[in-house]
Image (cartoon, rainbow, N blue to C red; front, side, top):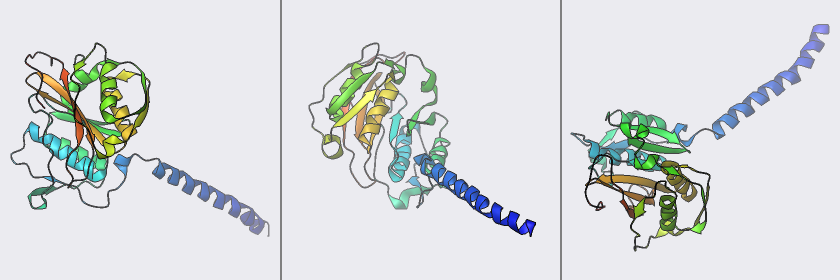
Length: 253
């Protein structure tokens, strides 16, 4: 009789404990990074054989667009922005990855010259050496700034204005369309140029940033993270910036 009463007292407690456990698991799943969420389909990337460093952007970009993960990409010198093309199913490589993180890891393993990290909820891909170069463009300090209802082009210029030392740039006369027309508001607390670009892309949502190098100079693009079968749309700013150990004219993006 005593044992039966004890069981009856323990049952509600057991149910409550299990319920709390389920809530904890649900909270963990809902708060999981987008990069760790299982992808419903298969990840495919263009079959680029033989593969060179200038083709790497295309592969990382295809993973980002399929997974709808905001992307930041810095290319190696001499490759410009890299190609962005539609995925031809008959000329693709099937990845074994089941999550975006695994897919980015798998693509990164194809080349020893790129390393990626999750920063501010974005996939940021850079040349392996660039992460620790003090005089790298994206590692420049950037002071805090606030933006209220500005388009992507003006947001990019405000990011460049925040760099220390100053980074010169040419103002684009082209007008964007679609997602880049929508105004954005950002409160950036300071950091480096990379984090400032991340702040803009995160505020835009369906967007990406890219940095390309050619002829010893750099250019930055903020663009739309469109679907695989849609054209790329974005703002390009030509940067008056001499890459470390190189000279030459302003890059022609």
